[in-house]
Image (cartoon, rainbow over all chains, first blue to last red; front, side, top):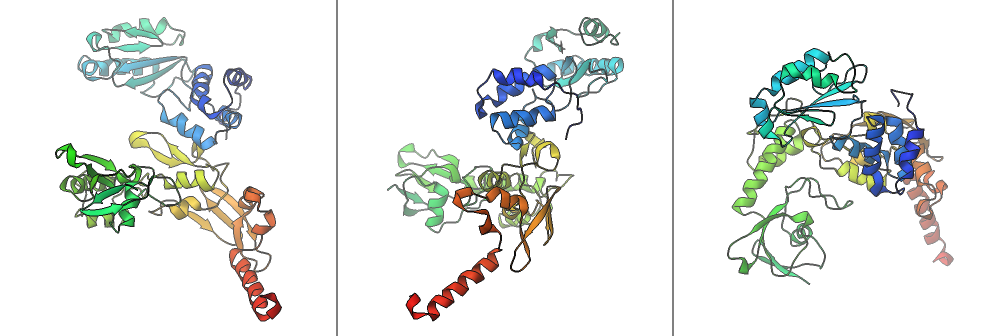
Length: 162
Length: 256
């Protein structure tokens, strides 16, 4: 069932220790797993299911329901390009093209070295500073395609951004 | 006991029942797709919409799904007001767009005067109407082996990771309850395959027919105090055995 066999299961023990072993803990545990592993590995989900006494199908259902969870490895830095109306009008498309050109990943994809993931989001509620790109935790307002490299390079994502 | 009026008919309903049941008990038909007596109401298909009002509401009314609306004393219910039929038509129109090739949906839509969807038909037609009956019956009778996955337009019924579900016992409850035949399986005397998982059948010691899966027998063992050997003979042979006992008792006068 596992595509990536080398997952450090000891990290999960630390997460499970923090919550009561019952169904209501599921989302918190999954959030911690996502943060720790940068995705939800199959074998970790299986362990979570048995530890919390929740059917695996329910764990899978929750894992695929929320956008915050991913079943495939995400980059260390997630680049979110806002494609809401204001950002779209002010050139979100060019920003996506620029990321695509530099990192060779399309929306929803991750670079091979797991440095970056590109996502498009619908609206981040910062229309006044459109177009907006969120690089990791940093909000970049009035983003320009020509400045993107600088912002990508300043992160821990990797050095091939230049 | 709550007294209410459904389509002009005064109905006395049992406390705690839902409108849908009260209407059906009164002989009033309301269409449904996600309702089944074996599982809790779900409110997923939205076909059982009805209008609810009260005399003191001055003509204002609210639309509710009757399968989840508890009966109340003094309410006036309409199961086929203009608003209800129109909304039901929209629901069926959308369902037909999703499942353009599904006979059950086609028939139900035709009954409501829709021969063709007014939306763009699904380019990848499916028979799954997302009624959730399969996952609910699996939660109730089986092992919660399947669930809904994803959300919005991408929502689907799937086993974990889209692989053969590890918890599935091959009881076929999901396939049997599926109103559209979306869930496919093969079952013979030796093996059964559902959700891409293969099961070995347990053969009846009397007639040799494979009647339940080995996984089912293991799962049922000891449940509700029923021992595993109860599941060894098939239902037909069990009935024959019971009948033979009954006949022998009738034949012997002292057995009465």
